[in-house]
Structures are given as C-alpha cells and as structure tokens.
Image 1 (cartoon, rainbow, N blue to C red):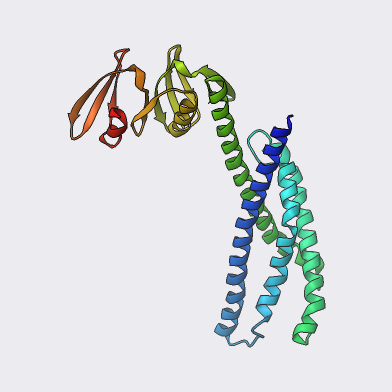
Image 2: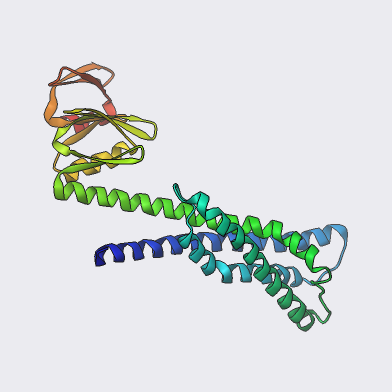
Length: 281
C-alpha cells in the first residue's frame, strides 16, 4: 500500500470518528437533558421532594462514562465493522463488546454515585444492593446505547467509503479515460468513449454502451462526474436520462417545453424543459 493510500485511509478514519462522535455526543447530551428534567418533573407530579441537582448528578455520571468509553467503541467498530461482507463475523465480537461495555459502565457508575453522592448531597446512595439485578437492568439500556453508537459509526463508515470509491473512480476516469462501474459484486471498467446513454433505475443506472448494455449501482450524478473527468461531453436531458452530446442528431419539441432527443443510432429519448438549457448550450 502506497503512502498516499495510507494517508487517505487515515484521514478517512479520522473523518468517520469525528463525525460519529460528534453525532453521538449530541444525542447523549440531548438524552441527558431529557432524562434529568423528566426525573424532576415526575417528582413534582407525585409531590416528592428531591434536590434540584440530584437528577443531573445521577444522569450525569452515566453520560460522562458513556462519553469516556466512546473511543473504545470507535476502535472496536474500526476493527470489526458492521458492513456488507463482514458483519456476520463481527457480531460475536460486538456481543462481547456489549457485555464488557456494560460491566465497565455499571461498575464505574456505581462507584462514582456511591462515593460522590454523600459528599454532594449529605446522604448515602446505594447502588450495588443486588449486583446481578442491577447488571441485568442496566444491560438492557446499555445494549441499546452500544448498538446506537456502533450503528452510527457504521453509517458514517459506509458514507465515507462511498465517497472514497467515487473519488477513486473519478481519478481513474481522469487518468485512463475509463468508467468504473459496480455491477453486482464485480467492478467493471469500460472505455468512456463507448458511452451513449444512461437511464436512472432506482439505485441503479442502465447504461447503453457501444458494446451493449450494462447495469451499474450508482447515480446519474456520479456517472456524469466520471464522464466529465474522462473528457466526455455528457448532458442531462431529463432527471432520469443522461446522453452523450456528440450522438445527438435532432431535438424535436413535443409541447409545453419538453422535447424528444434523437440519437445517431435512431433511438429516441425524452427531454425535459427543466434541462433544456443544458441541452441547447
């Protein structure tokens, strides 16, 4: 692996970690505020007097430890990502991760509460009266917390990997004038100059090439960027159609601003008034 590739992957991992950790921290703080105020509101509702700072302390010990454990989860997700092709083998490690996360979180949370509560509120706080029951009770919540964090990291990873793949495809197009197409589990490289038309089909694009048709998992916008990098003058004539401008032989109005675009092959495709300015440029 080249130094450039190593640097790129390092930057990607930092981007994933920063984005996911910022998102998770925001969710944790929001949850902290909601839970703390809910405890106070419930106490007011039933007429039970509590110290105004106690809910913030109780919930704060939990949130602080969750945030402190976040780097460990970032490491685990990076080592065992829940992405296509590897998620099944990663599940046992994350199952063990949930147990370890809960043990550390609950253990330290109990120590903090029992040691600091008498100092702050002048009365004891009993947390470990029944350790097994406490652990099982907290395990339910910690499993959800762990899962949310791992899935958030996985989501950022898939987005970043998709961005890196698209960037690599544009570099390939610029350097070799070939298009990179994801077709099922395969990656197909085709000459950009063979491109004729492309039609959006859900999460896929149906390409017509000089050699035949190809179905690729990508968007028209991604394909358009690759073609531009490869030096092909591709024009969007409709939100669902992309055409090699050099193959257009006729543009026929159909009324209300729309057109029919005829190609040198004799094929006709619809053109939308929304894209007419691009078509006649």
